[in-house]
Length: 246
Image (cartoon, rainbow, N blue to C red; front, side, top):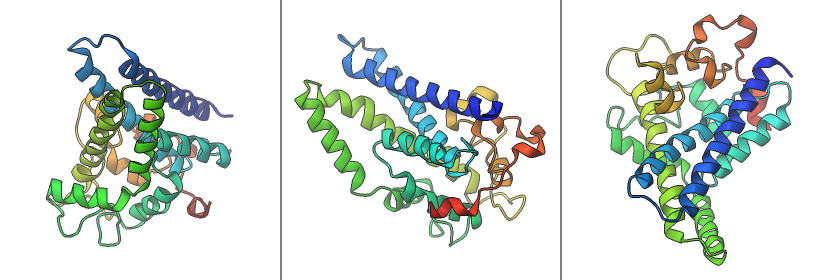
C-alpha cells in the first residue's frame, strides 16, 4: 500500500466516523441544548458532503487504485450511508460528465437553465433521486421507531443534513464551476474559485474551489486538490475506462 492510499483510507475512515459520531449524538443526546441542534445539522451536512467526496474519489479509481474491489466497496458504503444512493448507478453518468462537461451530453448539466440555480437543481434531483432513497428512509424510520428511536431525530439529523449537503454539492461542485457566464479556460468548461483554505474545505472538500483542476487531473484525491498543481506526475491518474463496466 502506498503512502497516498494509506492517507486516502485514513481520511475516509475519519469522515465516516465523524458522520457516525455526529449522527449518534443527534439521535441519542438527551436533552438537546437549543444551540446544539443547528450546529449538529450544519456539521452533519459537511460530513455528508465528505461521504460523497470519498465515493467520488472511488469513481475515479483514486481512493485505492491498486485494489479495485476495495476501492468500489468503500465508495459503495459511503453512498449507502448518504441516504442509500447507489454507487454503481452514479458511476457511468459521472464519467459521462467528464467526457462532455457543460454540454447537452452531460448528465449533470441543464442546457435549458444553464445559469439558473433552482431550475437546474430541480433537474439535478430528478435525474439522480429515485424510489430507492425514500424507500430506504422509510425502512430506517420504521426500524428506528421499532428500536425506540424518535423518527423526528432521524429526519432532523440524517435526512435534513443529506438534503442540505445536496445543495452544497450541487451549488459548489456543479453550478458555480459549470454555469454559463464568464468565459471558460478550455473545453472542460469548468472554473475554480479563489477561496481561502477553510472555505474551500468546508464548502465541498476543495472539489468546488479547485474544480477546473479536478477536470484536468481527475486522478488526484480530494486532499491533493488544494495544492494539486505541484503533484508529482505519477500521482496524476486519468479515470480508467474499465471502471464504467465494473
